[in-house]
Image (cartoon, one colour):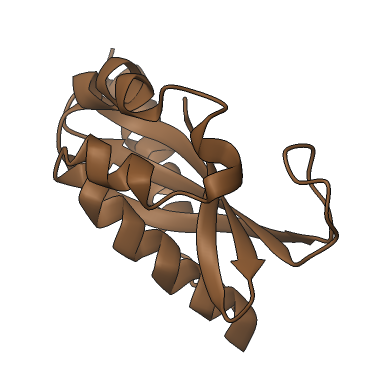
Length: 138
């Protein structure tokens, strides 16, 4: 029994230490990250309609975003901890027919009612600014 407890503690420590590793980002990735965190503050504050309105015009009509947040995000409760685990850059994504910069940012997040979840935000560079063009939480 004691070995099982120590093993569980060790696994938890490995997960949380991996979450704490710094990720080196380019200046463009940092700008996308900052816009993503600004948008996540709305989602974290349960301002789902505001968050939906701030999403890229191209994806607003693809899903009832306010309902998606209410069904998938709200039950998780307060975000306790959020770290970027990966940033991928792409010139195109399925929801955007135009070639432009995209940053797919993956987070490892600890919520009040779910110790470890994955969030993915797709950021699209529209002219000078980064806009949210997708969000998933698992």
